[in-house]
Length: 189
Image (cartoon, rainbow, N blue to C red; front, side, top):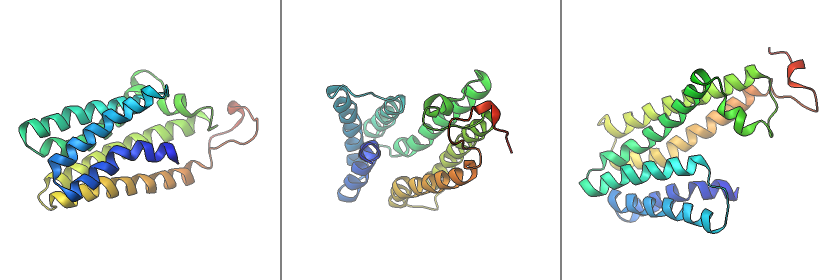
């Protein structure tokens, strides 16, 4: 739970700063929080995950452009770019390099046959592509205000991810293996 909250730290501070100031202050706060997050991990000699570096790079580039050009459109693109990077990485690894990134990261904690890992990776890729597209609709369609976009970014996208994880867990439960049964002895449904 602590790791989960730590990973959400810049997003939470972004939301709080936006409620008390504006999009530009919130963007600056999120940038400082992202840099602080990496600094904290370094000082504590903890592992800095690739996701942390990617998120920091995107917030610095898009947040920097937002502040420098005084144009909130850049920070509004940030969730889409981040999600599409995640989705693209999963697809490129799976089909370009024949490597399942989720299996590489989670194989010690989750046991599934290859069919389950493929479904998991492709469904996450699809989720990220769809979430990025939804962000663009909320941010730029003209149907929503900036404040509604901020709420969607913080609560809507997070809520969609929670629902997706629950649904995927229920679906992939039939692929999960128990005990010490070797993966190749489990048949795909």
